[in-house]
Amino acid sequence: ERAEMMIENGQHRDALRAFGDVPDGTVASQRASEQIPHVKKTLAYDLRNAAMGLMKGDKPSKDNIARAHVKLSEALELNPGDDEAKKLLAEVKAAAKKRKVKLD
Image (cartoon, rainbow, N blue to C red):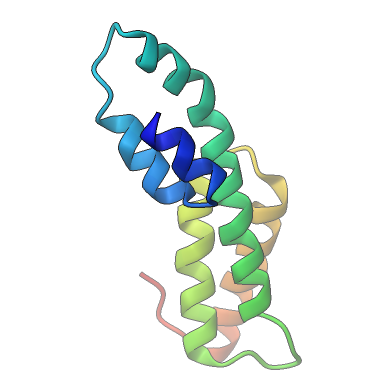
């Protein structure tokens, strides 16, 4: 129930953590397992959009390139099937190579 309130308040990362605390085999765990995929996709979408914002402009800063890489890597961990994030990650890697930005 606490995690569901967090989702309603837009606190998706906290909700995902709270779902991890739900005991297995309970009604709450069944509800959590139904909601976790949606929460992960929402978080991935938010991270992808944040990365897009960091890469705006003709020449994003080296710091923004590195930050965008971190956000997109996390987005793809949450939602590996996100083709837009994969495409943007390739663009970020190309920008990093061009600007000689070391990526983690």
